[in-house]
Image 1 (tube, rainbow, N blue to C red):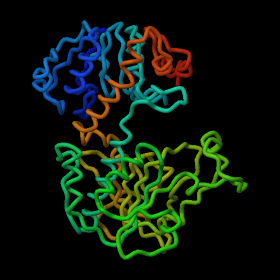
Image 2 (image 1 turned 180 degrees about the vertical axis):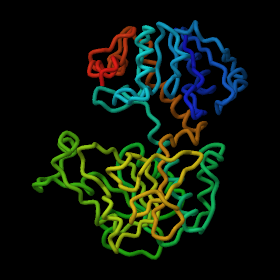
Image 3 (image 1 turned 90 degrees about the horizontal axis):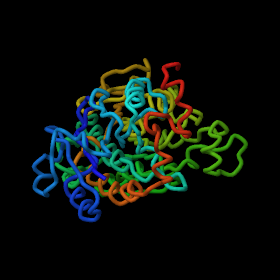
Image 4 (image 1 turned 45 degrees about the vertical axis):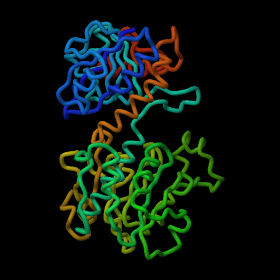
Length: 400
């Protein structure tokens, strides 16, 4: 098998890469029958020379590779017929902006495997950037708090060489006695907690967050059973909640009214209860100054998340009275950080982590004659929708 590592072609440029130099060398040493070719790139966080130093060949032409590996959606004009591609396609929710790319993949007889659906037998994802979204998202939230209050300044995340430098920035931050709240319990939330741990502040229980006052900065993390309950007050069951979210109501507001800085890291289903309604922001007890919305669901679950922000312009303001975008520094407005491609701010660290996971969990599946793991994640097989993704038929054909 010959693996080609793609240069990223999505605009805005993404500096991440699926296979880093260190991991590329490890793969070819462990699997003598696998050959690797790196597509040359002048924007990638890892330079061509770093691959060449490890005797990994680099070329502009990767057309003789069997499997082509990227991160983000591939520009349709660069697609090569009859190849197997692995990347985050962002098509499974019928995203209109990627329809043309999926159509081109089908037209060219491409086999498209989407990382988002590479799962084990228990439907747990095997490869993702969630931890890095949480790490960078929490850091950016603290950065935003410094800007909002004028208490301190730290480097932007993308200005840090890697996560070690990012964490070093936090060692000199001194926070006033505020309460920081994180919602979620997966990789993203744990990444956020990893960042907060470098502030040397105390983690408290959800119960203490609600009932106690502190003379020092503290943070708490909420699981779903803290912020929702069943309409009929039956005991919380996580599996039931994920299947029937419409049967639940929010219990989040009491926590919100005790919060100064909020970092949403939860998964949200459109049928689930919302977290913050527009009227909540007008309550006299409401005093959240900053929301670093790592989950970045636009509009409904958190009213102040009006849009995604960008790495170039990470912060905007939400005016609770007009419910519109406004100056983030204006008193009474909430400063919102809602970047939707957070791991791209730490391309070296997030790529190295992703590449190691790829080597350990995906390569063994790719070299099998037949793999259920790969089969579940295959949207197109030689240009044809697979059974799991047949629901995309009308989307692919432009009928919806």
